[in-house]
Amino acid sequence: MLFNSLDFLVFFPVVFLAYYIIPHKYRWILLLTASWYFYASFRFEYLYLIFVTSVSGYLSALFIEKSDRPFIRKTWLVINLTIILGMLVYFKYYQLLIDPINQAFESLQSGMGFPVINVILPVGISFYTFQVIGYTLDVYWQKTKAEHHAGIFALYVAFFPQLVAGPIERANHLIPQFRQKHNFNYEQVKNGLFLILWGYFQKVAIADKIAKAVDPVFAEPAEYGGYQLLLCMVLFTFQIYCDFAGYTNIALGTAKTLGFDLMDNFNRPFISKNISEFWRRWHISLSTWARDYLFMPVSYSRRNWGRFSTIYAVAVTFMFLGIWHGANWIYLIFGLSMGLAFYYELITVDFRLKMAKKTPKWLYNSASMLLTFSFITILFLMFRLQSFGDAINYIKILSGNFAFKWVPLMIGEPDFIVLLACIVMMELFQYAAGIEKKEDWLNRRPIAIRWAIYLMLGFIILNFGVFNQNEFIYFQF
Image 1 (cartoon, helix red, strand yellow):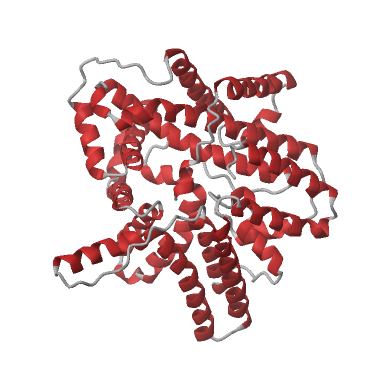
Image 2 (tube, rainbow, N blue to C red):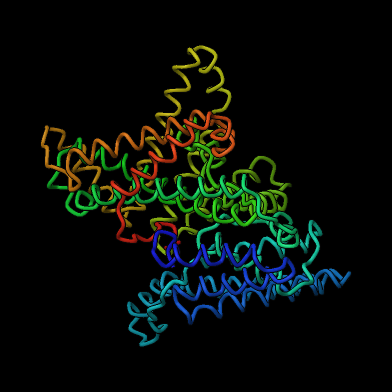
């Protein structure tokens, strides 16, 4: 059940109304049932993965908390990690791992090999499994207490607004909210509906419209001029951002109308002046998860290596961030490239500080943002083409074909102008809001301005949006 589908537009109002009608003590049952139904609507037979993940995380955390013997605690941690990571590896990385092994067996003519299995990737498995892994580690490290209510914990795993594409929530932030009684609050509902509206604007009016424009270009790059290829690279960067940020805003808004507060995943990533800042602004729930559960433990475990402990931890973390995105070696290259850029920043920090002092601030910041955005745009090309060779070929065609060769884009010139206007409007709005939450900034505007923005967004969505129910890009991860 996609957020941008008619099914969801029927499902959510029913859940919303029932939530505020029934007594508080039964609401967790409603939300859990709705969440399981929401997940089953994608593929019913994969609902058992939610059950296995919930049972494994729930029981292992209880046994870890109950015991004061390090060996027993570690044993239950390992059991839980083995079950959950085993499912993740099987469904997401099985084919990637067995292909080189089977090729080796074939070259030896041994007649041996692993069976080829066409496995459909369960929606959201990378998100809810990591959520439970983080919870179990927090209990093991005694940073949080184990949840004793099986139903509340199952709801933490399956809460439908953030189930299939995050944000990856921490247990000590989300679980207590399930116990709080949420009365109908006009301000919260209003703010939530605005976030949903803003999310649909990003998804159907920008991301899906960009997809319609750039898909033919990426399919046949040799048919287009270099300027168009460059433009499509930039547009795809905005597409993947608006697609994922659109999902996040719909998720945040949906949860907020029910009284829940989820963490935001984005904070104006395209104003980043370097890669480390970019990862503090992009997919924040994943980057902070990797920092807390991977980078810090790995760095600490190798603390006797001196400065090399940081280098090692950076390499491991960014390889993880790369391969997390999918079972394709191109994602490993993506992660390693990000890691190299991060390492470059570590070893050139003194030089860059000197340059910053000698250069006008506006010029230095602008150049830094442009270089960072350009680097990100090139790497995101791999996401779109899914092949390092295809990405290199695309760059070759682009660099060797800068003679003006205009082939009309699929969406037509008037729509293209509106698309650019929407992107500019989005960036201006986010710049105006700054570090403040978008809904809070808007609430401080006069009512006439607020309603003008509501009506304009609604008009653009209805008259300009693409309503063919395109899946969100991050569903594949």
